[in-house]
Image 1: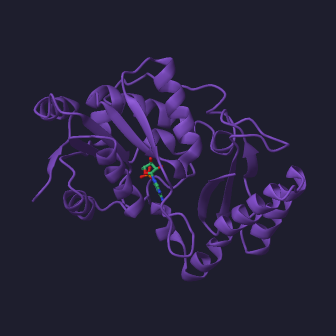
Image 2: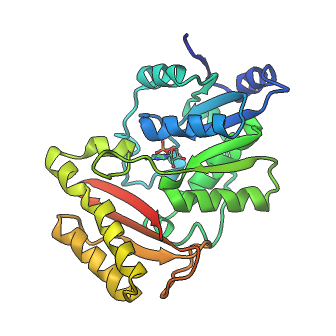
Length: 278
Ligand code: AMP
């Protein structure tokens, strides 16, 4: 079956109204879809969605001026086919002007959670994320919305803004989907050269090794430094961060529950992020 595609907020609202009184899920993406994205669709069904709406929007406001917005991979036809095969009911694929009409002047900013880690490395990134996710949630007014734990900080920022703005939507976090060797699936993995792809597996491996060491009583600062050193040895640049954090993304210097280990590092021209639960 071919998938219905709508490109304006008004058409989206009309199409979703036809799904009522169903339980509607929104799965926001930037496209270049892989099995990690499709797992979000399955998670939406698992959470009881009767209708799943996916969105594909490469959001310019979450990219810095020197980042990869222009060369971000885009293949709407392949994405639409994958979403149709996954049983998605509707695709929202707006142009930039449909999301940011002339004169657009509103930014949603989540202070604190949006300023650390990737927010520090990519200034303004989470303002763009928070703004577009708020707009998507208001446009679609879904019962639930699904986001991947791959972007752990993004999930925390979204949970915060939904709570703060009392948006009537349930936020579901879905586990990270990985390649056979352990590298987290990412649209940006397509940028890796074959050599970089082989070495990229050091990122999940360094996190696993650090996790094991911490569980066995290793000292936090030393263990994180060893993980960063392993990445550099494998050909990554000095990581933007390798950090153990609590549920509010505050750095931990000793293990407490729940703790999450997060890292971001560049290999060649590609910036990769990953995280694992301790
Ligand atoms: P993106 O298209 O990269 O902006 O991602 C769209 C959604 O898919 C976000 O909620 C991501 O966290 C999620 N996602 C991306 N990669 C994965 C993955 N490997 N496993 C699970 N979720 C993912």
